[in-house]
Length: 284
Image (cartoon, rainbow, N blue to C red; front, top):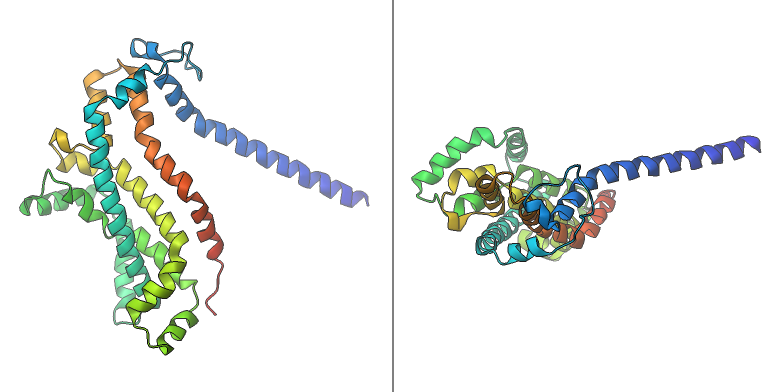
């Protein structure tokens, strides 16, 4: 009896410690974002940045955010990022779903070799690919357009890998039953497997959206026209132009720039949990 009581106390203590640790890490992770939002509401931060940092400004003002939403260049950068991001997400997710299904359920020569090549692309960072990609798009005459920002993201080794792993967990009997009914591969994919791929598709949308929206290095190389700047490029140019001054306005711009990512994540987070739960389905 005493052992049972002591075990329950130990379990409670362990759970409490876990929550305390998670709470501390959560506060540490959220503090910079809360401070960013707070400085955005502090009009005096445009003169001198508050030190030591404070989470609640002395005089709350929406002045900085009012200027942000009246800024024509920011609106143009928003539209540019939206065009690039939506196009990249749609093409990359569509291509990855098709490729993942082919690598998982398809039967063709060289499938393993091609999949190994796809996995090898995960080992190559963006930096070594900058010069070949720049030369390629320069020869095509596509620099200072949105195409260099969209096309390289269509084939993503990470997304293809995630799709294949997800489709591997779905039963092959679904495909066999559809084949008995006379369905072809495309019909099987679109009618049988694609409706089940909602959770993994939502996960890929979030990942692809974050990668495309936050991309800075590659757009910096191929975009020189101010009218084609994306959000990260505009924020960088604004910071360089103003230096350490206008800190409140800079933080307001940064806050507004991350809002789309937060909104997309909040809408699709439940599907990520579903994709994790469905990963336990066995194809028997």
